[in-house]
Image (spheres, rainbow, N blue to C red):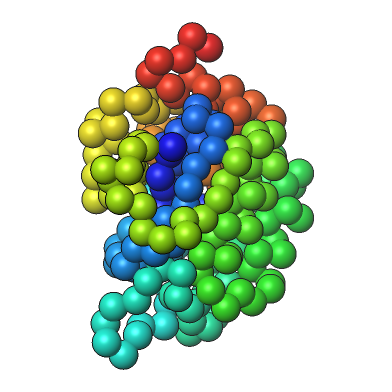
Length: 211
């Protein structure tokens, strides 16, 4: 059993595990953690790596289960995130092909972060053409119950070298001529740049893969 955190347009590393193991349990009963992929993704941009952060409503007591975290409408973030994606990937090989799949997520309002994350996760799996079985936790999954726990390992604070299963292979990126290849960006970067070949990149990024 693979245990993953809920995440916003998660990085390539997240999808490598999802692809390799055929499914996962999304942990929704953990306490919400700041400065993680739970409400942010990192894309490429003309000025380098760019974090896109979904504002959330902070609970009065400071603690909140992930399943109860509400999305804030502060700062017109949907418009800003979509404009950032357009500016970053308009000239990518597959942006025109996939833009209509992504745009609705930045036009419709979701109340809860886990709902939004799950819907866009399913859409990305569909576009990559993988069919993992994804379920949410009914209660907090304890490590001793077994499984492969990536709730904390897949994090912007951690180096990908900490993951023995993931080896980020290079693929085409729009701005690689400026700053070189940037590993483990959001899956959006992979999809817009590689299109139908995205799944081959995921398979090739598995350390144990024969692809």
